[in-house]
Image (cartoon, rainbow, N blue to C red; front, side, top):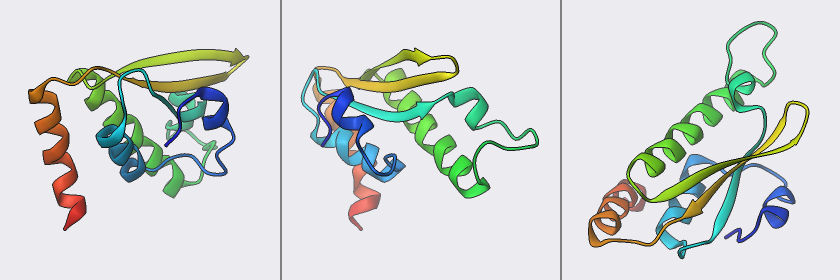
Length: 114
């Protein structure tokens, strides 16, 4: 589990959607995970030439959609930190859990446990 942005940037590979879901299940309020570093809108764009290989672009789209789902459902706050020109850290910060949120995350994790 990644607890701060500095540690997140040291990850050899960016988290997958499954890793983000596992983090959502275990994260305590205030914990953070950097789920992407770059320029998300450009990195998922299908314009030629693509910035990422197609398999990575598809994976990033799923990851970003899951982070957006978590934010829309009150699980995390999403923060974008500008590091430089065209370089951003996309960070999810865990929010306090209500019973409704915990049951949503549990339901999300069930298919992965099977």
